[in-house]
Image 1 (cartoon, rainbow, N blue to C red):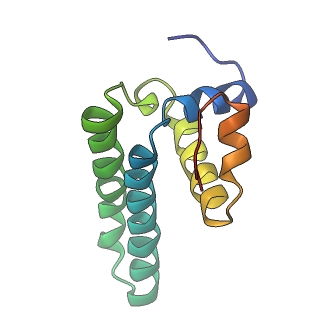
Image 2 (cartoon, one colour):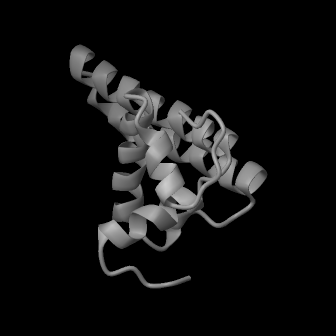
Length: 113
């Protein structure tokens, strides 16, 4: 794997590692659960729920990489940039702005919302 010196150069690599819509969908499920668990913990004051956040997020992400994309999760080599990229991808998807980013990264898209 190449060494990335900046998030800007890592970002297109990250998108290429998530080239299949189903992989991204699994990530969106995990990211949504992470946010839901965090909100639940904050609203209820049940702080132990925060321990479930990594499990909720990584379970779906790694499931996608091992079963759909069939590649090694970038988080194993670039944990912080991967986390940031995951949420960037998630919020771009939520705001319907992910398609151009995927295309710039060289990911073929149909309706790649």
